[in-house]
Image (tube, rainbow, N blue to C red; front, side, top):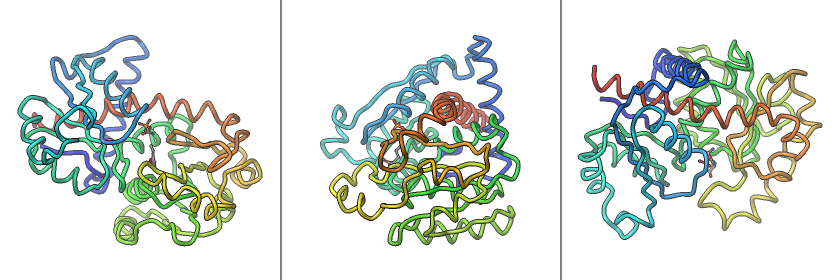
Length: 308
Ligand code: CP
Ligand code: NVA
């Protein structure tokens, strides 16, 4: 049995298998063929943070695959009143077929997985957001940007930056990450990515100049400067990220046909200008829709692995 906690745990071939499944399931769904790959299965969805896309994509996804999703917000379950993660894991996994969790520390997710008797999916932690990257890569394929692309990530060295590091270093493409000083991605994750890159041939560059990162890029992406749980740092962060907004001037440095991706929610006027956001709304909302298809790919893949 496998869990989906970070892309670090998967080979290039496995990531591509999940993407291929997502593509197949998307094509079927577009023909209104909802194949019940997960008939009668129950997906528990535990949320310790807010969500629009993750909740909707998993809940609709499991339903369209023939199963049912159980939305468990921490305010409504005993976890929020201090029931240990490991007890919650042992109870929920005895009743459900798969679990998705959105929480704070990656260690909490790992603890849950260690005590779970069913596959566990990371629906975002402070460290990683791997299900988002599956949708992002699917979108890159659809926009013909998956063949040795240069991807520029501008902004905070956060869970999205870490997930891009894992995707690029596993698949072997060029990733340039530009952050303000003091907001670099976690050095241990960078080390690991550089190690994976040796095998895959990925080129990973860490920069402090966003313009240098975006120059000639095929894909430009960013994320909020204030992630969930960092609300108190807002004023300091807004100051520290000056010059890191993806605006038209910056976007013009990328290739003329470059796409812009954003995991959403987007804060216009901060990490992205209104103009860039609206000019690239097609890509951004294809990416958001692809959460549904990509999440189905991950769930079906995990189910197949469990069955052997
Ligand atoms: N991108 C993303 O995970 O969105 P939500 O926080 O709305 O789930
Ligand atoms: N980095 C953001 C991503 C939101 C989908 C956060 O963790 O809040």
